[in-house]
Length: 117
Image (cartoon, rainbow, N blue to C red; front, side):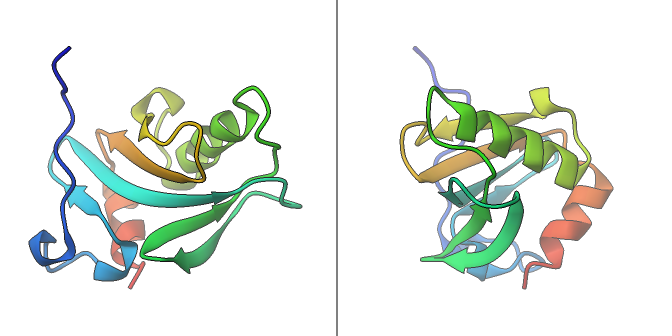
């Protein structure tokens, strides 16, 4: 099975307009790939800063039968104003540490990511 996804990118390979605090992040004209640390069972879904070089996101769902993953996709979709089909969990579907890819990023999304400094 061929992988369509780019390999992980390390801080030294990051574009200068993106914060190195986001951890593994790769940006091109077709997709943005980033590391996410998910905290399930939160009171509400929100971005909560950084944890070990990953974007920390609290989700208002428990990690039962993929509910937290669905909430994460829904939250990222709404936050970055892209369709839910544009958000994919590349790895870590059964872990709190995930690699998420967002395809066809909008200018609004790229602006939001540049604010994560």
